[in-house]
Length: 437
Image (cartoon, rainbow, N blue to C red; front, top):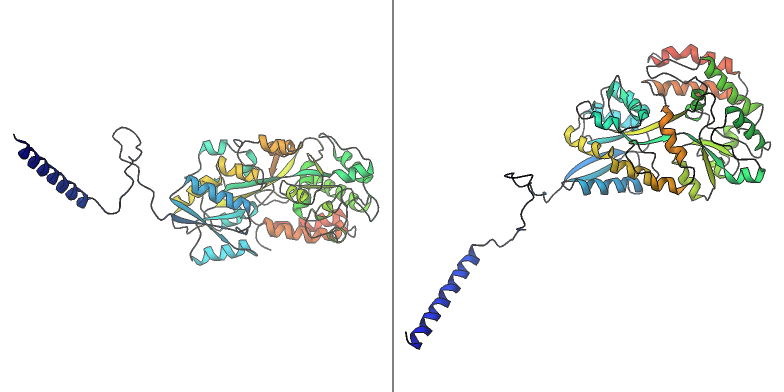
């Protein structure tokens, strides 16, 4: 073949290649997609579905301001990281949360997928059929990972109705400055009720500073009744106030307030602020019982504190309050709601609860190393989860607690005897606790 013919052939080939490339280019889509292979679940498995461009929203209702709550922000971020097809959307109801939510559920309107609910409201909502049982979702593996107090707190009539948000277990806080100024030795972890009372006396200066403060409501003193072998009320609605051990504990506290004058009245305490810990922060009460959430205010106000277990009589005791998450009746997709609940009760979410100071974790699987390093006494918080019992919350418990507080107001002021106050409660308790008030 001569040179001229070779040249013509080469030109022809180049023209054909150009036409072929043009045809293939025209057949290709103008909007390209990621051509990386999809992950599979095994040999011959179909590719996993791609994440939708628009995530499905799941609504979570609480009484917290989610725009300022660091725990809620972190929970949302972690949930969406682990569930990229879903978007967590918070809703807030402030004052009158429980009543407003019950009205919403009864009205059958648009409901959130998940709601925050305090432990003492779980029996009320479950009894009214306002929240769903979690029997079909909760596994033995899950319940075995919990501290016993959690399962007890969130069960109604033998069925689980909630998962834990976090736990508040009572310990005793000591105001280090007040102890040091008064040159009073710090009590050790094995202190008794008598040790506690004597320590409070040493830290008291009449009408100036007090050894101990407790709010004059059921949450402020029930743990003392439990410590002496008594109690407030049973979970099935039987008053325990009339037990001798309960009356003895109430007499012990009244004596501290009236005879020893080592406990301020509510009027005296509230001149330093309306929160339960205000008198402690003001360096006016040297001891106060409370939970982990108190420490945020102590740190913010630069109050040096120590932690001890609650004083004991025969054995170590405490009470725990469990805040929770529930599925409202009428939720559009309970299975989707459970995905949120499953996360909220997971190791990852419980780690956030502990790390942000929201509360103690419900599961034993959480890493507590960093928490225990933060403060030398944090071990007492974790130990309390092993021996605490749920704060009692029968169906009509809120009504009972209101009546108890009303009957005990004069008792704490020394204007009514413990015996007469207890008798008044025992007379009205059966009707109140059966819903016949």
